[in-house]
Image 1 (spheres, one colour):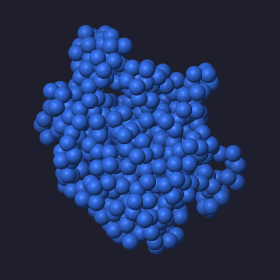
Image 2 (cartoon, rainbow, N blue to C red):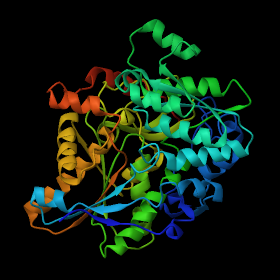
Image 3 (cartoon, one colour):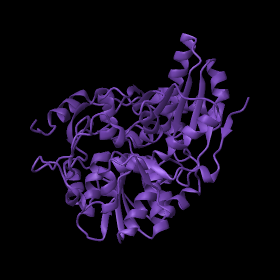
Image 4 (spheres, helix red, strand yellow):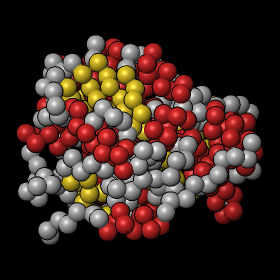
Length: 453
């Protein structure tokens, strides 16, 4: 049997994003000013973000209406399809039912435009002319470049150097949309030059790229900063994924016993999982929620739940999250979108509340899972998405061992069409499992900021 496809009508696209802060049993810990150690206010964030996004960041309203100009652009690819993976189930010999929400149908090839379009809209409404940002593998940079082109915004992207070198075609797509893309660390910022002076061949990290983007955004009144993950409003914009999936699971006359998503900063995971977690928090049906991260950058499974900076240059406010330390540089594995030292505060908070589980897998076993998925379902996943595929397969094999016919839902957050060099290395046997330096991790954790109780 081929995969069964579940499609919503355009009129069924959600009209609001879901804000999980409305349903938290314990409020999210405050964001702190690194100088005063006091909770920050809107004015502290104003140099970086327009007020509409700042209001969303702190909102406790359950629903935030999606502006019609944003919904109009969403219609280019949304509602996105949901599939049942019959061929994968058969290959695994599992009694489990496996469904996946496919976000690779967007123009940028991933889930990232769900927030990129929204952020570009709110910035354009505020009169902003230029956006700066960071990107790892390039999915976020591609998405913001796409969104910026639609709203007439100049976009400057700092791409982590190892990904800049590994993925030249992703960079070409950003430039096709009109953005300027620089390898980070770069010579265009004070912080970038300081990193290069210490280590000229530095592979870069998302934390460093964030520092560079924030530094430039703060220098000009017509410039703001856009972030592709981690922040509350970013995760909220992604919940359109899970809201659609809920309707589609009802169409399939099924409901997930397990929801799986890959995690780096937390945006695609939150997108698929938060609506299901919210339903459970309101007394509805509960699903197990599993976050899957790379073993080479295991913030949820090895990180410390602590206040930390979101960037390596320590320019951002302090947020409480699972972190490996802002000075930690992950090894150069191919899932560049997951190479971030910290996990979104909301995802971290839910982990502390026992609402989610976390697991970590190596690069090679995730690629093995991605190849099996490609050969059964026909879609080549991005390296990041391979982690969700691996997590779903592990759950399906558990069902096989236990003789359980559970329903598994995962988010296939993007395709791997720009990542074929990584697949070539995998088939050639050259894709090694990168391991982080334990002493470097210990040093980074030892350098976490001290926050008074």
